[in-house]
Length: 377
Image (cartoon, rainbow, N blue to C red; front, side, top):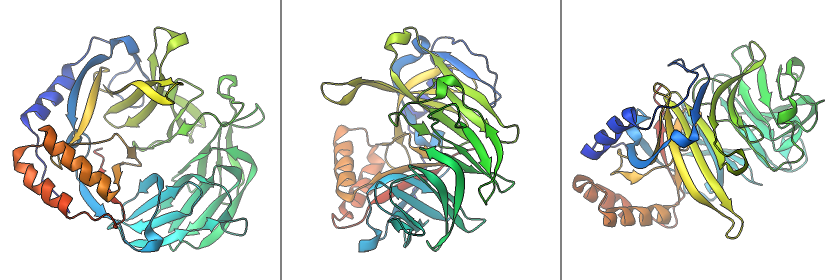
């Protein structure tokens, strides 16, 4: 299903407001997306606006996933490509669908034999051109390679163990890997050929050595670079495999280093999404959660809610991965969200009938649905 784009009056106003929002912020960047952008957290504009999803994506489609028993899943991460949709699960096989939602195969399986993985997958690459899928385990000494039919091709042996690795396939056919280094003896980043030989190695700095698995590495790679955010460090980085170096892309300065919020950065061509929150140990839930968009051209940041103006202004998420915005819904959860949204008065009148009809088509026994939009470049 594909719907027509519309931008309501309030959405246009929000977009205009974004271009002028906030106080002037300290920055060391120009409009060059490859330069470092630094903003002051205290100068972010906390007057929340609504931003249309069409500000960031160029198209939108709804994918109803195959209803067969083998197609059911509990997603951890969803990775679309031009013609496929890959679904990573925790403690279960990686699943592959075509772009229209038809289930194709499990890629590998849980176990300890050839082509099997005994722990969860932490990253994946769908290489359509090469007809391969690369899977990296949560930790281990290999990268697993499969065909697009889900069958195991081989393991790429690694020279040492990697922890929570993230990967990128380079144009020269090598594979770049960034992971959590537990000691100075382990590189932070390195490149390997398809036989596992290290062709480039980047030592880890002391401030990025970790003692355990508590942190994370986030790498969404939405802008054609191997960008990543390592929670041991306050900076969004790019690993430049050609020059074998790290390049700083974004950072925020917090006025109180001892009481700064937990923060995660997500890079897209237009700018940076920054999710900031404090963790409430009593409720074991985040509190004071805010998401900001920092425009790369102006260096200014704005608190916002994202709305799907392709689908009646339904609330949307900033889940951008490998060049796509992805939202995953269980049928009855989506049905309830649509019902609540229409009752809220935020759904334009012209879209109420469309959303109501769509909600009525949802069945509790169906597999999940995906909202997918391709990111503007």
